[in-house]
Amino acid sequence: MTAYGYILGFALFLVLAPVVFAFISLDGNDDTLARSFADQTASVGGQQLPASKLEVIYRPPTMQERYGCNASWICRTTDGAYLLAMAQGEVKRGVMVVTWTWRQLTEQRARRAMVNDQQAYRAAFHD
Image 1 (cartoon, rainbow, N blue to C red):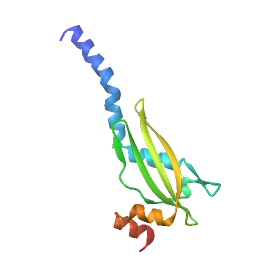
Image 2 (image 1 turned 135 degrees about the horizontal axis):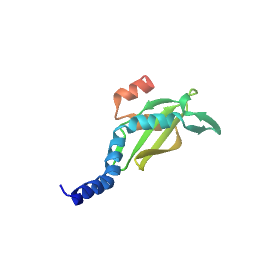
Image 3 (image 1 turned 30 degrees about the horizontal axis):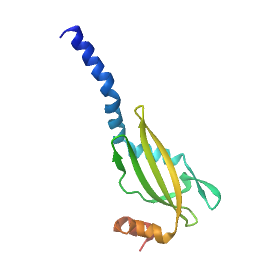
Image 4 (image 1 turned 90 degrees about the vertical axis):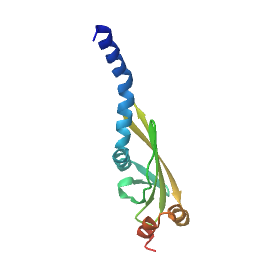
């Protein structure tokens, strides 16, 4: 192989490496989401509540995209309030960066969101 071949191979590696590492990081996005979730604080009824105090009652499969992911988890507080935790992950420089958005739900809306997963529904609501 000539010197130009080595240079071309190295240049291709430099161009393709970030893309490959981005795809590799997507494989572990559930772990990344879980770690990111644990660091969050949700506002519930005007009070700040650490995510570690929430029970995640429904965690459907994460939607994976080429350079990121989206997830929606339904959570319950210790006093029975329901929250929708929406995560948007974006790969930046080979690292997944996750942003969380929180919405309060009624029990009826939480139940409706889980109706197609009977096993999770029964586990969450004991019905």
